[in-house]
Image (cartoon, rainbow, N blue to C red; front, side, top):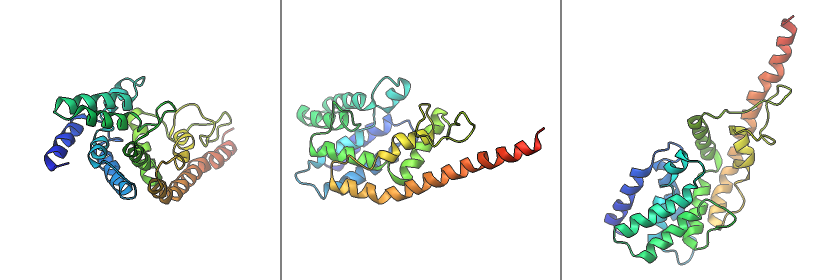
Amino acid sequence: MNRETYSLIEAYMLSCMDDSAHDKEHIYRVLYNALEIAKTEQDVDYDVLIAACLLHDIGRKEQFENPALCHAAVGAEKAYRFLTGHGFDSAFAEKVKCCIRTHRYRRNAPPESIEARILFDSDKIDAAGALGIARSLIYKGIVGEPLYSLLPDGTVSDGAQDTAPSFFQEYRFKLEKIYSGFYTARGSEIAGERRRTAEEFYRRLYGEVSAPYQNGRTELGKILR
C-alpha cells in the first residue's frame, strides 16, 4: 500500500469517527498492535489488514444512534461501498469487508482469514488492561451510566450479578473475561501482560467505593435518632 492509498482510506476513517471512546487514536492503536502481531504470522496481506484496521469502526455512529444495529455489520457494508466506489478491486473490498464484519465476535460470524483474526485480536487488546478500563469509563460517562449500583441491603454491588449497566457490571461481564479466546499467540501474550493491572485497579476501586458505605452507614446510624 502506498502513502496516497493509505491517506485516502485514513481520510474516510477520520470523517466517520465521532466517539471519544472509539476515536481515531483507538484506530491507530488497533492498527499498530495489528502490525506487531502480523510480524509473528505467516502470509499476511498487509494491504487488507491495514485497510480493515483503519475502517473497522466506521459504523459506530450508526450503532450509537440506533443500538439495534451492529457497528461491525454496518461498517463492513460502508467499507465495501467506499472501496469499490474509489476504484479498489471488488475481491479486495470483499476481504476487507469480511474482516470488519467479524471483528466484533458473534457465534455465527467468527473471524476466518489471518487478517480478520489479527484485527479481532488487536481490537480486543485495546479493551484489556488499564487502557480498556479507561475507555470503558469514558464510554459510561458518555451514555450516562453509573460507576456501580447498590444491593437491596444498601451495600455496593461488585457487578457480578447485576443486570443494570454500570462500570462494575461491564468489568465483571466483559473486561474481566477478555483475556481468553484470542486467535494469535502474540495477541494473547500482549493482553496477558496487561491483565494484572486491570485486576488490581478493579479490586482497589471496589474497595474504595464500598468501604464508605460499610463504615459510614454504621456511623450515621449512631447519630440519627
